[in-house]
Image (tube, rainbow over all chains, first blue to last red; front, side, top):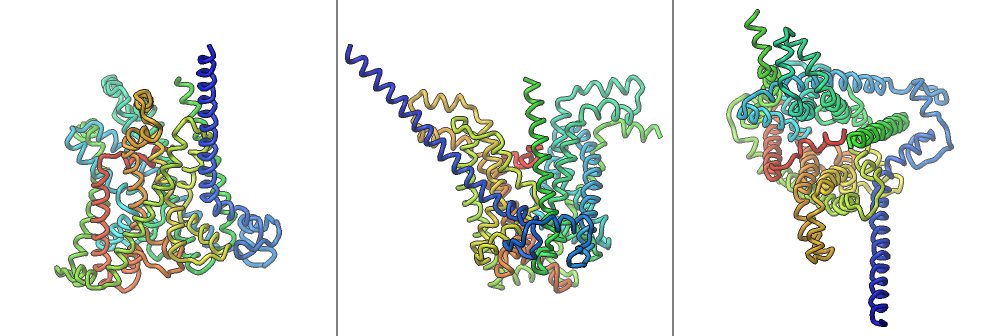
Amino acid sequence: MKQTTNIISSADLAVKNRQRDLKVRRFFANAYLWLLLVVLYAPIVLIIVFSFTKSKVLGNWTGFTFGLYENLFTGYDRVAQVYVDPNLYHSVFYTVIIALVSAICATILGTLAAIGIYNMRQRSRNAIRFLNSIPMINPDIITGISLFLLFVFLGISRGLVTVIIAHVVFCTPYVVLSVMPRLSRMNPNIYEAALDLGATPFVALRKVMMPELWPGMLSGFILSITLSIDDFGVTFFTKGSGGIDTLSTYIYADARKGGLTPELRPLFSIIFITMLVLLIIINVRAKKNAEKKK
Amino acid sequence: MSKFLSLIGSRRSWAWPYVLFLVLFVVLPLILIIVYAFQDSEGHFTLQNFVKFFNTSEAVNTFIYSLAIALITTIICLLLGYPAAYIMATAEFRTPQVMAMLFILPMWINFLLRTLATVELFNMFSLPLGEGALLFGMVYDFLPFMIYPIYNNLQKMDHSLIEAAQDLGANRVETFLKVIFPLSTPGIYSGIIMVFMPTVSTFAIAELLTHNKITLFGSLIQRSFGEGGLTMWNYGAALSLIMLIIIALTSFFGEKDDTDTQRGGLV
């Protein structure tokens, strides 16, 4: 009798020990993650904090003010009575234009390509898939230089158009990859049925295929936008010297001149917060959809 | 007209515009790199560009140095990233769901801005900009690219295998070493490729993080296209070809993975 209680209490002890052990491990594991996050986010937080003060360099707090935000939106520094570099606004404008145009082109080209590839025989399908993966594997610098050489070789002067072509090059493969899984889920007979019932290929594409492929196209489009905005290397080699700059190349030139334009700090903060909110929305929506399916 | 319609009607043909586009803007440019690499400025065949590279000890040193930096960055990212991915993917640690997203978020911010933020951080604490800053900045920039594929892989892992190992008497360390780690190697391969490829080819980061004190191979290539006219282009093309070979070898090493879709997986 005595022995059984002993066994029970020692088992109890073991369970308790294991629980305590788990708690300790849990604590250290989470502490490690938070530490890593603090280091990862320190520079970002630093810039956001110092977007609320007007000092030229970071780390020199000269009092809380929305001054830089005001400068950014009005384009004019009332205190110092100077204009904010107009090229900053041009670069934001070009970044948006290039991202939108190249994402639209990539989505159309990529969706058509995905439909075509899906209907091909295995061998040609694999060949095109291989070609499609090249721009994804190639580092920026190789894509940039190879296109630079092409434009020089063909005698095309570099500018807005060449940058957009270059962006379509590295965005389209991702569109193809996000549309393909949608196609394999689709019933291939519906399209044929539409054709048999007298729809032209164009109408059948718009009315039958598009609604099915839409989610894949949308994620390909969003991905293209972010890739385009994020790009530096390819733009750098394809933009030429005609004065076209995206935000990336502007920042690069600005940093090389020594010191960042202070107005970039509020701009960075706004972009970061927007991205954060967008990502949270996308993730929450994805989770809700997943739960609905369950 | 009817012939044209039947051509569009065959959906197979819808890929042709893209195939044409790929040939013109992907295949032809790569061929041009090879052609330029074996030419002198007058367009004659020569091996001079490669001879020049192997005879310039500075260039060879830069090449080896860049490989070393990329390798060290990749190893540090793996050592820091694997535990993070493991902790997030393991249920018993009860990490908040939002954590994984916080680690991935920096991937979506312009890396030049992130790099410059790092520079500002170093400046603020008056730390010297040099090799240390270079490694810190590179790890900082590319750590999310290591964590994400490993995390993805660990999350999709079949948990019954882990339970089976435990039922059969393996302790925690044995389970990890003999079951979890071997199963996660595809994720590790993807992570290594996603970190190594951009670090070995980077050209702006090093300049900014070290105030031009350290030149990496990518910057060497960039410079030969920036200054010096045509002769340098051919030399630059030769250097690009060497880089291309490194990239091809690396991607061959991780061929069986779905590296391509990793970045797309988030949206």
